[in-house]
Image 1 (cartoon, one colour):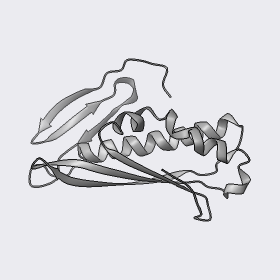
Image 2: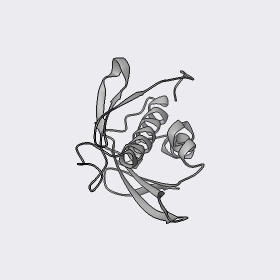
Image 3: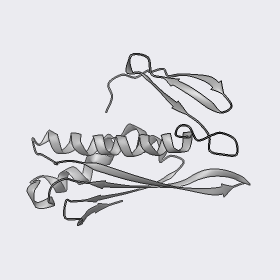
Image 4: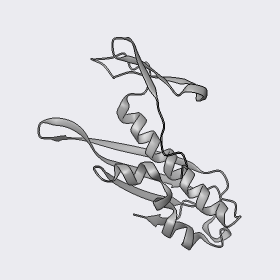
Length: 149
């Protein structure tokens, strides 16, 4: 969804496993590993990756709906990650993202077309899917499952 082909993010170790992640004009956040390595004073890299996938999918869903000048209501997302051992090392084996529309499905006239294409707009998810299984579900305001991949 981005038209900027290059970007840079800077990281600086503060102490232990706590890093300042500097996004330039967009500000800074802090990351940290969970115990016993770190103090969990910020999200760890696995959680940051999961948040990036969910955020990108939510933005892509909004983009696809708004292309048709329709209103998705208050969109929210939950992402669950699953760690698994691969060759003796912990890896993210799967991410499951649930997107929740803020309106009932029937109020979005072009929802079928939206659901057929929105995942392809997500740069992060499509990149991550080359190595990690990503499952996506979309539910409407009533909790009705309207899409699953």
